Amino acid sequence: MATLVTGGAGFIGSHIVVALHDAGRDVVVLDDFSNASRRVVDALRTLTGSHLPVVEGDAGDPDVLDAVFGGNRIDSVVHFAARKSVAESVSDPLGYYRSNLGSVIALAAAAIDRGVGRLVFSSSATVYGSTSALPVAEDSPTVPDSPYGQTKLMGERILADAAASSDMRAVMLRYFNPVGAHPSGVIGEDPSGEPANLVPRIMQVVAGRRDRLGVFGADYSTVDGTAVRDYVHVMDLAEGHVAALDTDIAPSSSRTYNLGTGSGTTVLQVLAAAEEALGTRIPYKVAERRPGDIEASWADCTRARDELGWQARRGLTQMLADHWNFVRQHLNGYES
Ligand SMILES: NC(=O)c1ccc[n+]([C@@H]2O[C@H](COP(=O)([O-])OP(=O)(O)OC[C@H]3O[C@@H](n4cnc5c(N)ncnc54)[C@H](O)[C@@H]3O)[C@@H](O)[C@H]2O)c1
Image (cartoon, rainbow, N blue to C red):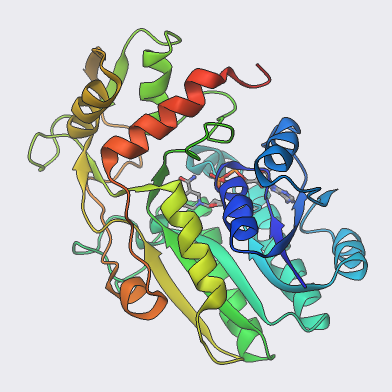
């Protein structure tokens, strides 16, 4: 039996493919390569030393799903495939609802039809929005600030209802801020276009592709005025997914878990850690706050620790060193 990984050629999905392989599971990847290089497939086959079955297609297309489930013995699904830009979701909300929720509905229907026992869903800390007390726990209020965040919250709701009406189990994982890369540097984050996230932007400065880092807002009510996030190593996330596939929950039920480190770091603290980890000076300039950015967010990860037996193990220095190790080997992304 195999685990179907939708979006398995993407940043987070590719690391989970390797972790599942290392845990002794067979994996089938479904990806439309709308935000991934086909070279990721070669990288994954090299890393796993296996002929990884990869289907190219849309996770929201029932015919594609029919072929994937019909052609493979699949007993679990991890669903990463989604569009993920907050800004783009504001300008194209209908496209985001159609794509992100269409794939959730089609995939849940196909999985239930084929008797799949478990579906793990990539959700996000963005479902909490900006009004929660910190740290945010799974039962904190959910008030997403963008159509993208809404698609994650609605996706959770749809899957919880689908699980309740069938024998399937649904596990929602709310990631905080994933960074880092596989220690080999063979796979990592290769953003297309202008990256919105802090660490890829820092890496562009270190790689000489950007003169300086723009620090968006230094007037927040935080220790140094810059925004606080909970950065978590993508390899820790990968281990969280293996735990979510193994954890003992009843059929017809669903459960939600935060995956973060449980501590927050400011932009300037990340910058200082990057200078230290990479041994270089990283020039920066304070700019206006970006619309939609929240002041601070970090996770309460008690539930994941108690129920999944999972805790993030890797610190910020390792996240930054591993992230750079991938970037330095792929200065023009996967195409180099
Ligand atoms: N990266 C983050 O900061 C972050 C944080 C929280 C949650 N998430 C969620 O985690 C998941 C993975 O994120 P990522 O950073 O690896 O993104 P990514 O864009 O690197 O990976 C997504 C993958 O899915 C594929 N894809 C997109 N739509 C598809 C579709 N309809 N059918 C088939 N394949 C499709 C893309 O080609 C890509 O390979 C997403 O659901 C995202 O919303 C990401």
